[in-house]
Image 1 (cartoon, rainbow, N blue to C red):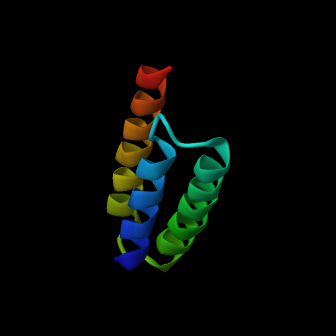
Image 2: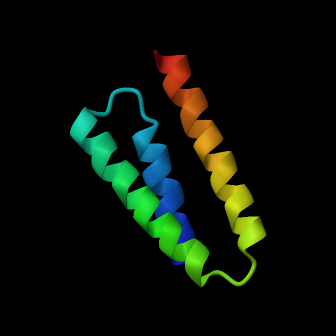
Length: 67
């Protein structure tokens, strides 16, 4: 559960318009690492993958809306 929270927060940080590129990069790497580990360790992967797809969708919308 903690890894899902870390992944979600890292994705939201990566989607902030005013963040510098290095901060977005670190947040993206953190999200990918924590997300990958959490999916491997999760018992019900389907729910977790759906949650991450929603979070990535929000990040994409935030990045495109800020551009």
